[in-house]
Image: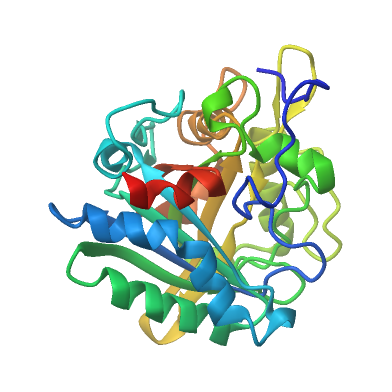
Length: 321
């Protein structure tokens, strides 16, 4: 599917779409990721929360506009009918598809609801997450909670710059937001999330030159290298027209040094989930020309879920259902 927009297509604005692309200006330096399942009978409470989510975000962040607090809500395939009714569904929504490669596995884990909080200040994310969890207590089960942070100059905990090729501006919107191909859900987006844990002890034993070969970029200067089969090479995907197919990455590092936990919370927003799913197949299964992504020898996914992020107006109408 082409990612270009025709003149007749609706280009999502802030009122129609959730803030998937994120606010302009200073990038988020803090994030909280909450993945929950909804208990039977808890659907009305969840619908009310989602309908009022934008107002709750404004209330928490009102006195601190410099913090650029946002929250994106996604709904999983198993929870869609329960929360949104048994009517129309997003065309490409389905459960996360696990992958069993020759050496590595991409696991599928439960998730009816994703809440992705971002801000330039961790206290704002913490305050909003506290309120969200309080309102959902007793009607949901928290499957995963991750507090993430920006690390030095946009680096991950393996020491490399992350998200270098992320689209910006209009290209980011074209990449992330559904358009005329699914008009009932134009302005929505698909989000794939995976929580990766890194074996930093093994990674740090590699000489820098070998690390660069795994990643496909120089560590100090972030210059792309010609390394067939590297992480960068495996994740470079071109369409039938020869153009590179992109996703909007919002991954951030997290960790608990005292517990030996060092990770990356990977989240990719896309107009069509087939794009990030193809990247994952290349990573875990390999291709005709390459083996699996070598970074998987040091990074293990322990979660895997797919969500649809409805347009903001869709969420506002949920309470009426």
